[in-house]
Image (cartoon, rainbow, N blue to C red):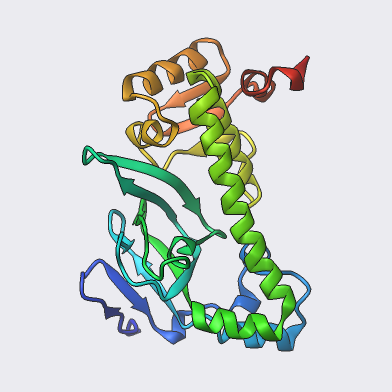
Length: 254
């Protein structure tokens, strides 16, 4: 059986997936995570038209770069991404980690240019949604417009949470909050409530949490020695989630 051709983009690390391999929004098992609920079949068929293409991004490759013209939002179908900016001293500052069912590219709306880099942390597929089409359909379906606003609001809340992490929390609190948030998001996608494989490096975690690599490693070791988590390279099992929650927010277990 012949394999369908795959159209390669200019950087040779990103490919457009042929129509024969695409899965419509109406048949996607992640639609409730990245698309509004309450659409009937006709509405979903129109929504399918918003997704222009699916794109495959290889591990370590860029989906978009700081300064690129903004034209589309991207719904992650499979895989994992990080977004980052360059600090004044040239170092990378990780600003977020995104997984299947989440939408990235919102940073480009305000200036019509992307303000960060989006890099695949593993081989990933994204659904490309031209923003002009999203706007047109939003005028026809207020529920979609509200959903887009909800996504934007969620980004604001996330950024505020990161600022709180960086400003007020000790290293143990930062890492506990990070692990709890990560496992909660993964569980919403059908994964375990207590086990996860970290797609990012400890250095990237440190960049995101405002911690040195040595501090991240030391905090992981401390949690492991105290029997809170089990760590084997990038595999993490949360043994006592209540202890992790108590570190993040002592009042929750008082």
